Amino acid sequence: MLLENKTAIVTGATRGIGRAIAIRFAKEGCNVAFCGRSRGEKMIAVEQELTALGVKAKGYVADVADMEQAQAFVKEVLADFGKVDILVNNAGITDDSAVKRMTEEQMDRVMHTNLGSVFCMTKAIQPSMWKQGYGSIVNIGSVVGIAGNYNQANYAASKAAIIGFSKSCAKEFAARNIRVNVVAPGFVETEMTAEVPEELMKTWCQRIPMKRPGTPDEVAQACVFLASDMCPYITSVVLPICGGMEDA
Image (cartoon, rainbow, N blue to C red; front, side, top):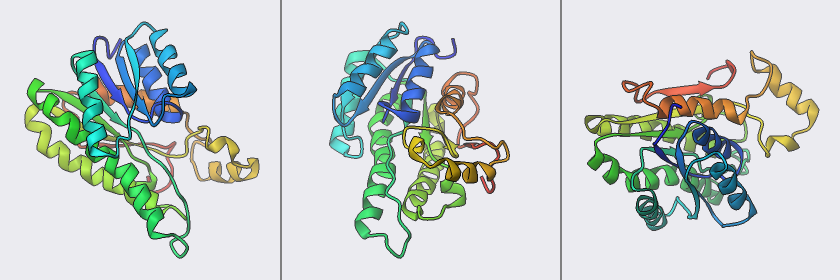
């Protein structure tokens, strides 16, 4: 197993891509701490699903875009698990609109959640990884952050900013063997895309050379690779998981 005896924090893991990452990590022998905004049925279900795979797993309530809550979350995880080898920053939101109709609040909220959570969690985990002399941080970006997209200027800006932030951190942290990379998914089937009309789905898929959307587990497998000891000399990389989408 590629992540045996390691411990990971995965933010936003109660559904979608984050949940798939947590499950795939557990299947690879990794203990998993994850978080959500409330301890509801989804968090409990994920916790049970992970522990059934034979690893230690625990869900925490935290708004990781808030610095105090992010630091408290990391402190709790370190107390409960003893160490953190891997951080996956997956928490994020969308609030789509054309720029001419987009409000300042829409821009601020998406940037605060998507970029702010990456900053807060990275800053919170850095001291422990720095002290232990190793670590892997995998930030979930998007091909939208590379190519842009209609009606998603705020989301695209937040994901592009994550790429710049990650590359800067990779340079700062490399001396302590802490790797920082970005996975950039394209169109991936999740709970949100399940509501997309069939005709629109077909139109979107025509833009993808592989003619289909990706799956959350395909994104998760890329995260396993970047988090594992298989790539000790890979840092500052942006890896598109997009089926060959144009401009990715």
